[in-house]
Amino acid sequence: MSEDKTKDTPVHFNQERKRKAEFIKPPNTLKAKVGSGGLSDKILEKAQLLLENNAVDFQPLAEMYLGTMIKGIEYAKSPNPKEDKENIISAMLYPAMQLKANGGMFHYQLVTIISDRLVQFLEVIENPDIDAVEIVLAFHTTIRAVILGKITGTGGRHGEELVAALDEACMRYFERYPENKSGAPQDYDTKF
Amino acid sequence: MTYQLHRISVLVVEDNQPMLDIVKSLLVTFGVGHVVGAQNGEIGFKRFCEYNNDIVIADWMMKPMDGISFTRMVRNDSKSPNPYVPVVLMTGFSEKRRVLQARDAGVTEFLVKPFNARDLYRRIVQVIERPRQFVRAPDFFGPDRRRKKPKGKYEGPYKRESDIQNPDIIKVLQKQQKDAHDTLERIREKEGLGKGDKFDLGPDSY
Image (cartoon, rainbow over all chains, first blue to last red; front, side, top):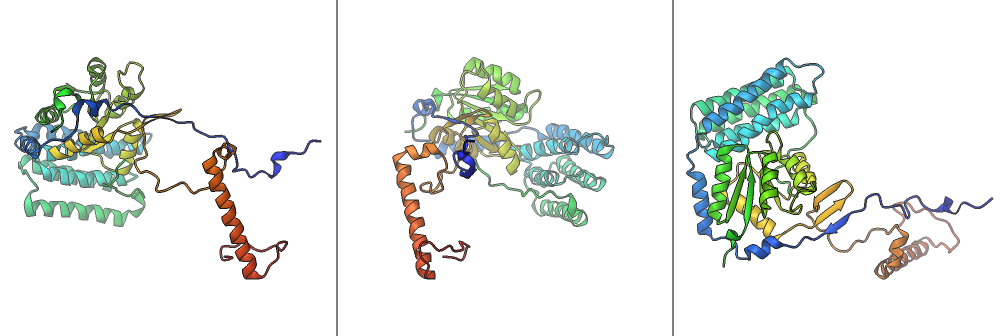
């Protein structure tokens, strides 16, 4: 009987590579085209002014996203037991994300700040229970009031108070339902 | 001297028309020579095949095709004229898991909305000045997902027979062997042990 030579070889030695990766360095044609030197501050300031002076009316867009959100809220209030919880949350999360993304682009920074809190809340909950949905409804009502009141900018002290009240509502919810908070930490500095 | 952006073409894929107009205007103000717009990923891919743009800026949430699926098509579809094109993904999401999802689809840079003119400019500078090498693996094709370079030389164990063919690695292995030998000598000296004696190699042994 032949001796098994591999018997004494540690299992971690000489294993097959599980994945083979090829590294490719594509030619930097972009750099070759544009050269170097960047852009002047004057151009960047001009671009920023263009952004700040855009006269787009955000209200119709916001109403559209709020309408989608209310459908998501109604859907969450009468969920199909077979429906995935992730899908129910997504139906409210995506319009919230759009409001967060677009509010600040069209002078409604307060909408961005409030929607950001809502996105964080929806990213953290695991079960869209009735109390969680009530909180989403409170966010919806607040954002709608900001839009209808044409409160552009951050809303000053009143804006801060609104955000603080919504924050407190979220904190109270998690004090009551700590089990409904996923362990995923919020990270706004991740780069890749 | 400044960037000659008039020599390049940029594709902007965004379903929100006011937002599309704003991004296009910003790029024109930067001096980009040719700016092409598309309302969703499907149209965006057609435009990309037509114009072979130098940079692509795409929104994430779009219907019928979102920015992630669009990026996968740009990277992997046989009709794609340039699978290495830099793709900047615009989105309101900034949570880590979302960033990782975009990264795994082959996105080059991530631009969180709302953004200002400088944020957009920085992403453009990034793709011009710091192009990413690409990785082709059985389950991934796209820019190298590792941003951080390993610090210093690799000093971990070498576990493959093929490693031993490399003269540099042989030197490292010899040094590791010598260090291990010296450590054993030190333990023996400290404990008054001979070469044949057995001893416990617990964490507090040396």
